[in-house]
Length: 218
Ligand code: NDP
Image (cartoon, rainbow, N blue to C red; front, side, top):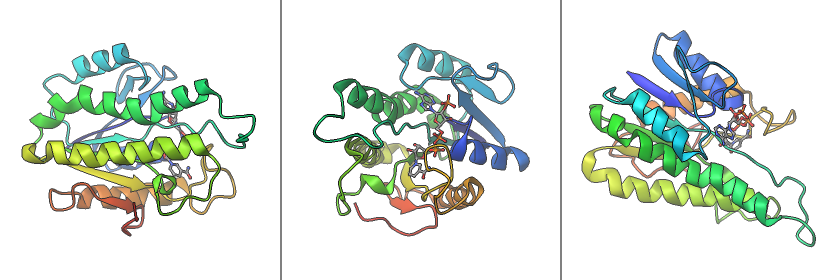
């Protein structure tokens, strides 16, 4: 079994990477150049189409059982509606959290198709939900909602090929992004997510679930 995780240098992605690695699973983590692209690592800035082409070449002919689109940014903490949320911040956030997910899926589809039952896990957020809209973090919320929408539509497009797509809220996690006051550790989140990825099948494709297995409202 081969698994590829984007944004595996820190936080939830790193915890998932370490967890799979310690179980002897063939896991590939991506980084933005912090580690040489060797062994279990590939270099990938998810916003860069040229980098995706290189990753696709490196993966050519290798079946990929699970792709975890985890890389993400939250750039607009503390922005004010009156004088904040600059256009460049919208563009940068969407380039990673939405376009980045799409480009990763597109680049790795040939490898997913080679697996017996390729699966895609998209790490979105509870902040994607339309039912819970307290305001604030307007860019991040919109980007994660778009990632959720993208995942749902991909699940429909890929259904005939038997490739399942799940969308997940990883919990509020103590990472650089989640902050020290968050609810759960990276390892708790990773353990829960791993169980969810194991459960993902064509019966549950298009699901939006929390790390601990509850259905999340859209
Ligand atoms: P961190 O900020 O701790 O780590 C983010 C990871 O994404 C890093 O590995 C970072 O790489 C990578 N990354 C960022 N931008 C890019 C890019 N353009 N190309 C490739 N890699 C990139 O975040 P978390 O671990 O907390 O979050 C992981 C995912 O979970 C994100 O999608 C986030 O939105 C989501 N999430 C997190 C929550 C939380 O409470 N922490 C709650 C809900 C959702 P580098 O080291 O190079 O910067």
